[in-house]
Length: 100
Image (tube, rainbow, N blue to C red; front, side, top):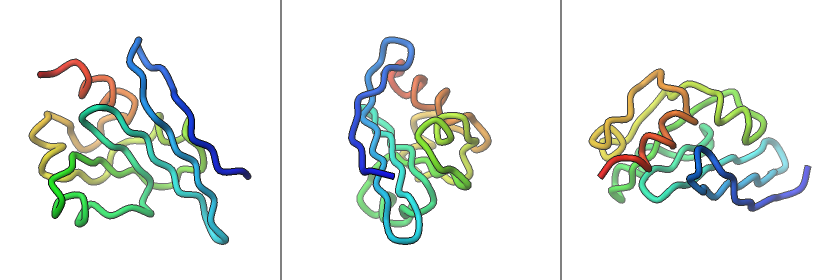
């Protein structure tokens, strides 16, 4: 698998999606203007320390998997946006763009 940085469109909102293979796994991340959704390779603790709104999913192997996965962990900033545990990542990303 190749590394890929792409723009994806969900409900007329544009997000940046990163697929980055390592020797042992694949790092996956989708970033909107307010929320980051990533695979378990990334750290909620670091996002919390830096004040970023981040949601974590696990067991994913593609950007499409990330979008369809349920959120398992949240940073406090993501909670403040109204993102919920168990919410589908795609729904959380779209919702985060509609608030504020």
